[in-house]
Image (tube, rainbow, N blue to C red; front, side, top):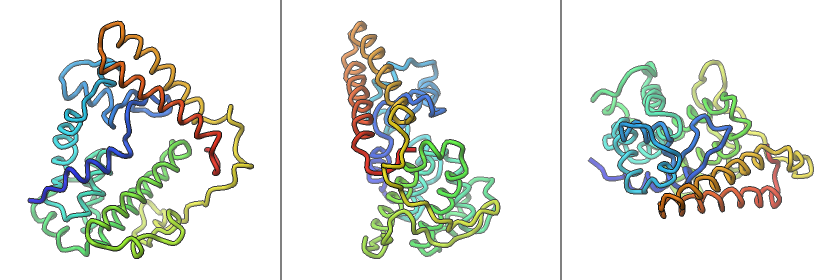
Length: 269
């Protein structure tokens, strides 16, 4: 049994970030990647947005291990593949991550992971399994309606996680990274008739971008700021210092997103 959970969790938390409440995200209020619904499930009762804001890193880590890492048998997966499968489980659900793992060994995506499946995964070439898994994941994300809102971030995340996983198996960055970054995805199987190696469009100049008032990034950030102010006032009134601090963090995050919009050098979707 390997102990790769801390490294994989740190990588995933880098992308999950702090408290957000994006109207375009069906998950709603989320902190450290843990949605309000998930936190309520774990605690066995309804939880408020302030409680989501106050979620500790230690509790989040315990939730990630129990509901995601253990759910995909990550301790029994080859190093590197555990990394990409775990991040996928967090982002899209354990069932989807398990489905991709089963597809790697030529099985129907529906079903669980048996001992013979784990043994078959261990026999795959590590580099190929990592790349093929990420191809399957990105192909699914590209078909989502919300890809136009979150697509750039998702594509960057999948690419970065792939490179980190390849580095975990000792593959040099110079070999694993493509000259054009996210536009180079190795050929792989076809999912629902869509080629896995379809190119990702290169970012266009900011001159062709929408005006800032038409940007969903800006309006989503404004919504986060408003929610953070309300949550902060409520936390302060209740004497919840942790919740107040989380609200301030979310507030600054929303402000930074708007500032980043004005500094952007690539098109904002």
